Image 1 (cartoon, rainbow, N blue to C red):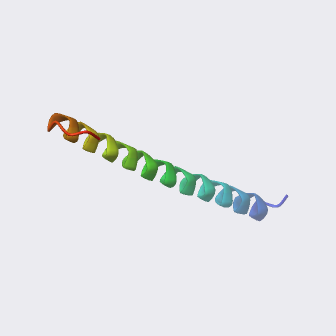
Image 2: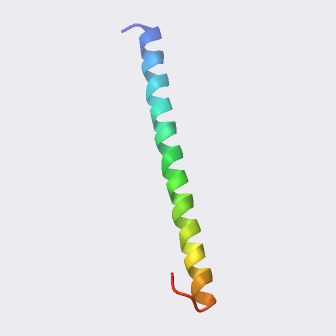
Length: 48
């Protein structure tokens, strides 16, 4: 393989990992937000 091909494969692989981690972090943020809402509701005597 040429250097150009190797760099292209590295770029594509890095990009796919970056986009996958963005989705995971976004999902984690949503989960934490729901947990915070649940704690707030619980402290005010409401159900989830």
